Length: 201
Image (cartoon, rainbow, N blue to C red; front, side, top):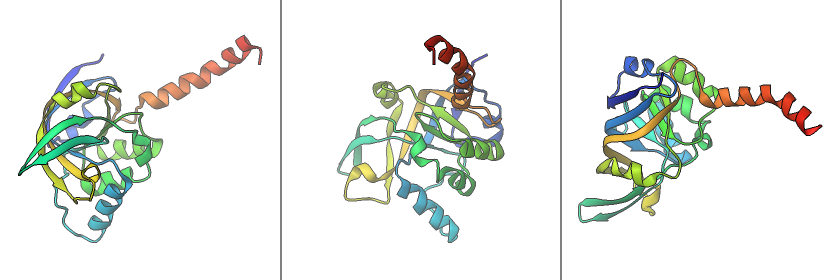
């Protein structure tokens, strides 16, 4: 049965392993915006060289999202946070999770079976946002704490967000090896014979 769960980062492995598919999660604490391949490759390369990252990702979560904001003096004025398709980052995520110790990925569309295996091994979950609901999620962001690895375009930066009751986030891939995306694929395959018969194919 789906539950409403409130978590605060940094999150423990046990807290993540206690979650189930379809649980509705609300987060408080700090999360990080990672949305481009180079965000992941740079992190992996630095840790591979035993270099210290400028941010502490252990026990935290990353958010696959664009964020619109501007800097006013030393402060940030956030306009919105959205979401981007997580599958674009499948290739980097298992190694990224192993090296950083993150406990969750937030995004839309799900991720592949290799990422699901890594989540089961390491104790991490995939949290799906509701598409088209940027206004709801933006309300859960208290402020932008810091930019990292500043680029010519602010839209390319890694961000640290301070959040409060950020959600709703659906547990769509859990640390037990379950995935609503894989289940949907299996259900579709089972339905194909009947669909073909009905269509006369």
